Length: 502
Image 1 (cartoon, one colour):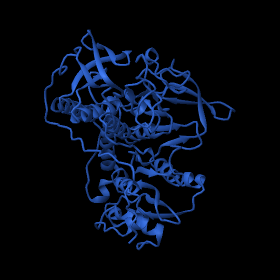
Image 2 (cartoon, helix red, strand yellow):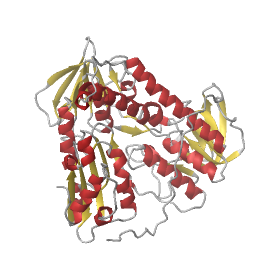
Image 3 (cartoon, rainbow, N blue to C red):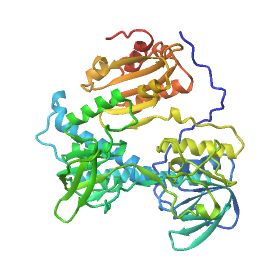
Image 4 (cartoon, rainbow, N blue to C red):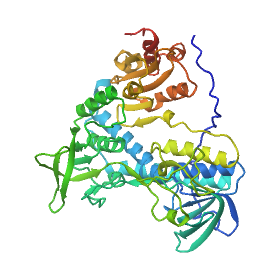
């Protein structure tokens, strides 16, 4: 058995598992007033990076205050992003399965219909429970929580305009900027969250649009387009680039797009929006080829603008204290998340790296551990990415295109879910697992999974990459039968030798 499990010389930090308390029912508007006492750590922003950093700092014995302008914790992810979108993705998938798949399993209904208010209610309930759960964790760990908009008045002082209408000054020896990101706007398109919506508006539509146009074929646009397509919308995705999800492995991307097209989503690639007219009953988009050419029009009831996100640093007073940013507004930090201003740090979406909630959490833990004098490290090459459509797409490490660009000799192993017994048994066998490994050493370089539950299956691969495992290590690890995880084992067998079941 190949033993490629030598631990890294770097000290990896313990991620920890945060469990939300879902039984808490009532909370105060704030846990303590923001007095003049100096904190060891002040966190500006209560999203995944900020609240995790605050809890970890408190667990390390540091006096900690977290400032959040929204009035509820969890940031974009929990309030208007990851959590509500996954709630709607699951609800819409259940409806789609009931309408199109249940009969094949011998489960029949006279009719199936969508109760959109109930669906939205379930989503809102999940969000409310989780935000209250984080407040409970703050209380448990003695994190001071200040609700309001914070801005620097010095490198060690933050002025907070509170949600109650007052003002307070919060002092800290170390201040962490964790303000996340905001929707990236497009020239000539005004988002009103009614007919032209961001992801926030797309999560709260009051009725199912007959025609939905999604501008942008990234993770968020495809997920939200998938929700409304399942519920009956005619969905067209307009993308400036020649491919959907440009960061995705090319082979996986092609199969993914074909799967979405089978679900009746339409794609207009290499196309840009030249103009928008909202004067009529329908929104009229003027389109033209990305390289220039003849214009065309496309009408929609609702247009979702999903062209990415930008770091949110507006109004923080960064210029007042001299914090350096790059040309697109990201805060520049060193390997310890420290800015050029002593005592000021930044994590999550406001700094370079993938704009993902779990990346922000890792940043937060590592940052406060280093503030506390411990060793910590985050490797952005080992941050998994997931698209929560159905089938899902999940990946970690290098794509085949990236490996080729590096000039590394490599082997590829693939296994189709059509040959996986669990996938066939449940009649959900679209997809494959693909593994890339260095030819000489068999060290795994990247893993890409397209199929049901890919977002859960990927973490075996994440752990393997962290420990420098070979494909043979996974192949010779016993996997329970019948499970979809066996497809990963078989793909690993195909990488270093030969699979059994194809």
